[in-house]
Amino acid sequence: MLLLPVSGARYGPDMASVIDLTLDCADAQLLAAFWKTALGYVDEPPLAPFKNREEWFASFDLPEDDSADDGAWLCDPDGVGPRLSVLKVPEPKTAKNRLLIDIRVPGHGSPEERWARITAESERLVKAGGVVLEKFDGHHIVMADPSTSDYQF
Image (cartoon, rainbow, N blue to C red; front, side):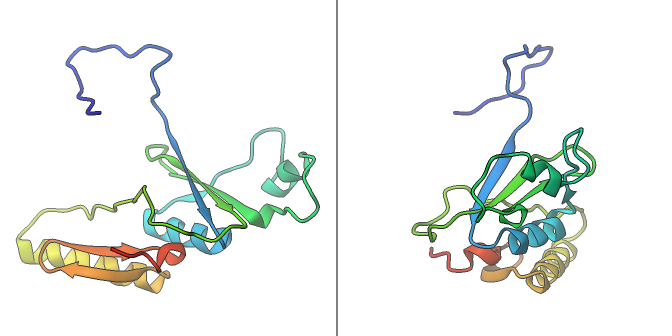
């Protein structure tokens, strides 16, 4: 489905205007740290009246083997990007991801200047745990986050 903006259109109360993305993984804290670095996100503050996530988490009647470390909730500090929920799941990954998060490196300039920024960003993300899978010189780099480093083309 392709949705295009229409000049002067008004969106009603049942129009989805905000989305959250949930990422299942084996290590929620590792993956959350990567996406905070990659996107400049921060830990989402707990909902009122809770003082922290641990207090919020304790308010649920969950099995003892569940812990606050089994999840992380991230948000764009500017409130523009979607929130991310990163949840530890017991089952291993068995198939290719169907949702890929692409990071667009901003800026203008010559092709060489743009490629230098893309290369620098990929190097920064490798230091944060990302893995370079394939380079398309002068255009883009395919990477995997720490939880999907076994990604197959």
